[in-house]
Amino acid sequence: MNLSMHLTPSENADAPHIVLIHGMGSAATAWKPLVPLLQSRYNVITVDLPGHGKTPLDKTDAMDPHSIANLVVKEVEREFGVTEFNLVGNSWGGWISLEMAAAHPHAVKSVVALAPAGFWLATFVQRYPGTSALRFLAKNSAPLAPTFLKYEWARKLGFESVSPKWREFSTELCLDATLSMANSPGYFPAWDGMLHKRFDSKIDPSVPITIIFGDSDNTLPQTTCQERTMAPAHAQWKIFSECGHAPMWDHPHEVAAEIFALAGINK
Image 1 (tube, rainbow, N blue to C red):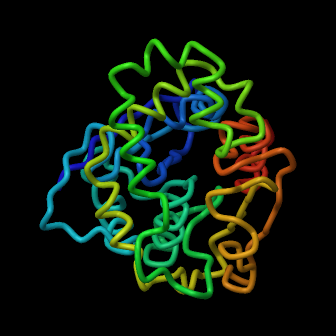
Image 2: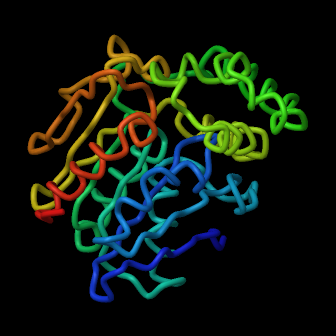
Image 3: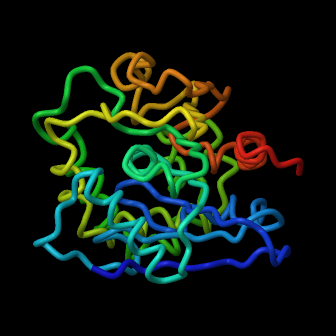
């Protein structure tokens, strides 16, 4: 499968590459708040994962995080000739990023995992309650979303549980997220690819890692989905205040600073 990917070139021609990997039911558009902040230091590659964004779903392809990780590494090299890059991933994409680092330490120079999935001791044996309702709501509201999301009550309905800073979200951000969820045939296959699994791969200590969760993450709550003992021993684990499940939305400047710091770059 060929993934839909986009390269935003850096202002610095010799800049390294960084790959941004979205979460389940999302798309490359989720990174709009962060890309301009990284562009001064990186050539930024955004990816639409299978069945998300502009990448179609091939029902014959494996959708578990390890398989997707190998696919992204292969596709980044095929499309851009890039064999070394830094990584940022959110949620499902955070888990995939960590699997990429585990399987391809020669290619991955650093990982910032934002609210990564997979850090649960008890694996899911069925889809998380409410997942069907979430996508049903997005699909059925999508035709009216461009109008409704101009109003605060609609943004509250859709995003209050996602972030304590939902009032600051632009209409564009909310519309992108709603349409991404509505148009993600890979959503349920991605869920099924995580069942009976957790992140338990080993990552070489030579790959620096920062894991960031928000203190108000209702999607992957601290009590059940943020088991620190499962993280690589050398990883930094940080909690952002007033932050939900998408730190790149709530605190894009702070996320960019963490990315630069991990890579040893002075902004």
